[in-house]
Image (cartoon, rainbow, N blue to C red; front, side, top):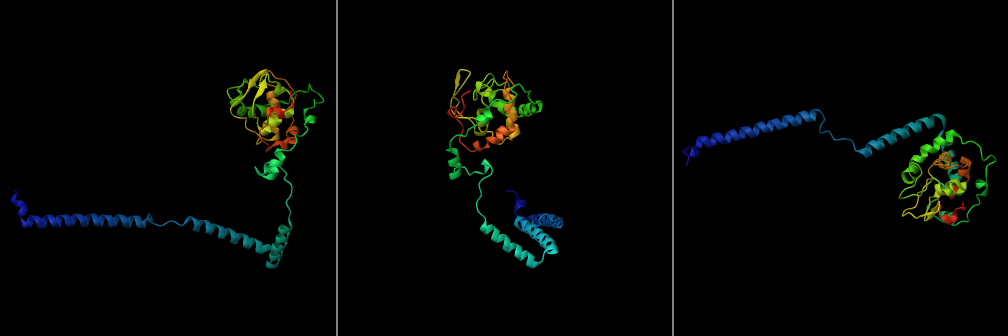
Length: 257
């Protein structure tokens, strides 16, 4: 055994050495905390709700000041009363756009089950079947076709999930068929150029496109990949917007080409 370990002086020295080390680190920690506090590192941030509330109150104050500059309290009270009466007396109005329909609502179901509209005027041959195709419309269609090409192929050759557009009698046939498919999608089997196709998933509706975009892409496919047919006009698409919201179309609902 080491005799120095039983020396009381050595033990006392070790005790004070340890105490000195603890004191040193304690002072160092207090110094670090003091610096952090001086730079605001531990400052509690404002509650997000308080910040949002402050902005709302500031905005309200600005509105109140602007309002008070041009209106008296009596005028404001009168306006509130008149507005309340108008709202209370208001009545529901018919929808203006098919997109306003609530899916599954009574109105949506009624429209979905309504008899097919007559689109014979849209399918009628134009006054000049040989009229040249507007290059600008073809350019619009070319851009929109980038989406279609993912399924129908870059050259309209078709693929594993969509039939071909090249040489398709449906593409060069009645315009209303193409617009209906674009607005509602297509479900079920279809025969193209004598070949039967029945894909596992239906074509998705593209009703989000504008009338000009739909007319453009349909005109493009009707005059590309060896196809040749007269143009589709935006007004044709606009006339068929009532198809939006109906279930995916089937071949039985289309006009035979």
